[in-house]
Image 1 (cartoon, rainbow, N blue to C red):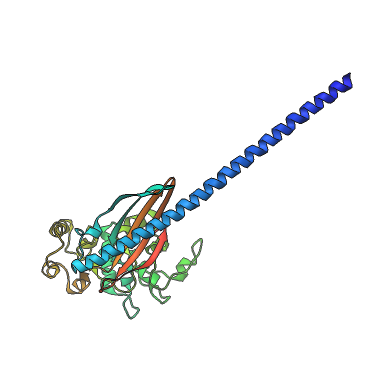
Image 2: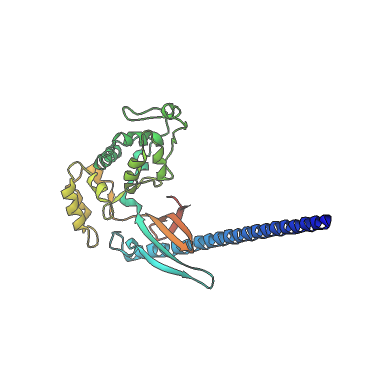
Length: 311
């Protein structure tokens, strides 16, 4: 009798263990299956988001093309300068929203202008960059550091330059780029550039191919103030007020008496380079997209740089 009871007890415990193991395995398989489904949906939503922002980019290219046909000047009162309102992204399986905006990159200081066509540091542009840094309460030596970062030689500028001999001694070590910047985020690598300084500088600088002029119709207040030592906050406030209704009526009449001739030669009232920022939210998936658009004199708009998540 004891043996029979013992056997039945062992069988019951065995059955309970098998049931528990089976349940645990089933729960694990269900969890893994749910994760696979969710992972697949996230990848699907992300890919759909990318396609949506590419569509937004195509739309913005058309806006920039039509804008050139309407007039040769570019200012902040035009359609392209308005933020893209939240537009719904809807289908049988997907619901979301896309927003975006275009910024005129020629309203910023182009760091690549620091080096002239002969490969030498342009003193006028260097002084302009130093003034911009001072306006932003940043160390003006960053101007010399940036010039050394993109010039072709290994001779450190005096007194503000730095070449490989400085950067290879850092931890981790790295070398200077010694060519024009392709992305403005490379300024974060300059010796002594901290996060706070970089974030303060970023809205006022850009890295564009070749030499570009500054569009005074769209330039930030800080960039306008840095054009000449004679331009203070009060003068710039007046300039921004003058350009509110369709830009300056004549940049010659306005700026020829405010800045030196060598600085005036860098000013314009039209632009060729713009940056699109588009954000798509589908379910819990967020896609942030940046692209740099180049508009040629005949109205053709070409995407020259794309990035996801970062500038």
